[in-house]
View 1 (cartoon, rainbow, N blue to C red):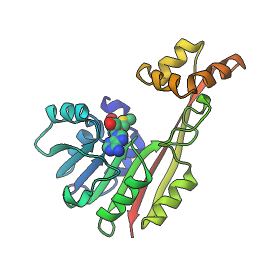
View 2: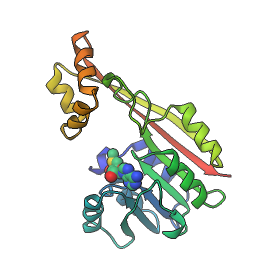
View 3: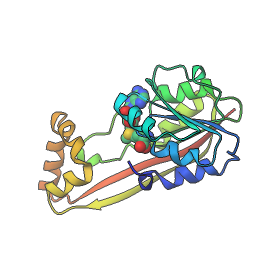
Length: 210
Ligand SMILES: C[S@@+](CC[C@H](N)C(=O)[O-])C[C@H]1O[C@@H](n2cnc3c(N)ncnc32)[C@H](O)[C@@H]1O
C-alpha cells in the first residue's frame, strides 16, 4: 500500500498533536504505509502485524526510528512492546484492539484510527466483520476509558459498468473470499437489479484516554 492510500484525515488528526517526542504504536501496520508517514515526525514508531510476510517487507524498508514485530493485535499485551504516547491503526480494528489500547495508553494518550464503516462495500450483502457504525465505535471507546474527540464517516460511491469493473474496485485479491462467503453472489444479484456502484465507507476517529 503506498502512502497515497493512507486516509488523509487520519494523518491530519495524528499530526494535530505535538508528536515530536512521541513513541507511537501502529497496530495492524501491514508493510508500514502509515508507520513510515508517522515516523517522519515522531521519535519512534513500532509496528505490529499478524502477517510475517508484511512485517518482513516493512522491516526491509525500516528507517532509524521504526521497528516491526509479528504479533496478534487482539491478544498481545502492548505494554510489553514499550510505553506509547499514541496508538494508531489504519484499516485494522476490533473491540480487542480498542481494549488493549485503552490498557496500554497513559492518561491523555491518543488512539487515532481509520477503519471500515458498516456500510463499506455493503453491495456484497453484508458488513465486514471488522466494520463499525459510529454508535458502536463510540460505545466501545467509552467502555475502554476514552473520550471521543473526532468521529466522522467518509463515504464515496464508485460507479462501474459491469462485474469485471466491480471486481477491480473490490480488489482482485479479495475476490476469492467474496466468492466463498456469498458476497460475490449478492453483488451479482445487486447488478442484475440495476446496481452499478460500490460504496467505500471509512470511519475515522481520534479518542483520548481519560
Ligand atoms: C487492510 S490491511 C492495512 C495494513 C496497514 N495498516 C496499511 O494501512 O497499509 C490490514 C492489516 O491488518 C493485519 N491484521 C489483521 N488481523 C490482525 C491481528 N489480529 N493482529 C495484527 N494484525 C492483524 C493484516 O495482516 C493486514 O496487514
